[in-house]
Length: 244
Image (cartoon, rainbow, N blue to C red; front, side, top):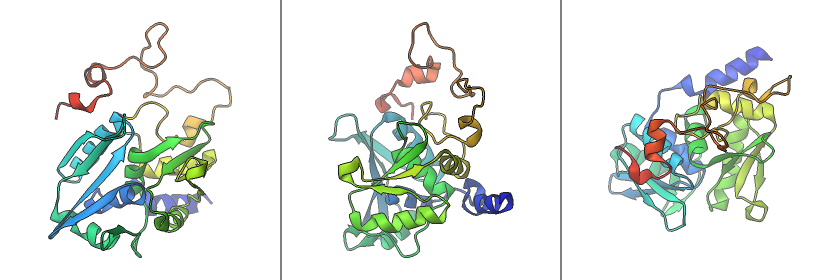
């Protein structure tokens, strides 16, 4: 069993291939949108927190894609987008049927793609034993994306808008730990508790609160969250303070 799991991680894990523009499939699996212009395309997505803007800008930059952002019409949300690029043209050709987004026949998920999806629209469940990946409004895409999740060893429950979705909910600590393993360590800007947790972080036989390098910052007396580093104090939670 361990050999099988190691093989699965090697196939789908973040180290299976270097970052590339095709990884933005992970955003399009969710609420991301792609628009074509001549021989170029642009990918955009609306996110619900400034830390997601910072993480996505860093991920786009790693892939050699110029980016921009602004405040969305929904309060507390932000729009993040790449520049039009010929390197994204294949995504536009694969995902669009006219102007309508549809999952391409060769679509798959792996660590790099899932990392972007988690950064843009992932959140732990309230009980801490599951993890949710939010979807876009294109209902015709949901089942195909669910099949791709299952192929990576992450079968998930589809919840519709009436149940708080649309989203896929990955249930169980083992599955969440598997997700954490294949997408890699959390980026620096991710707040504690927002990234999928590995098995070692979730299991605690002594019942004590686990302490990690990401959650052990010095706390001010009476503070409800870890004290901010100088960089975080400068940025706070407003992307307009980015030092880009």
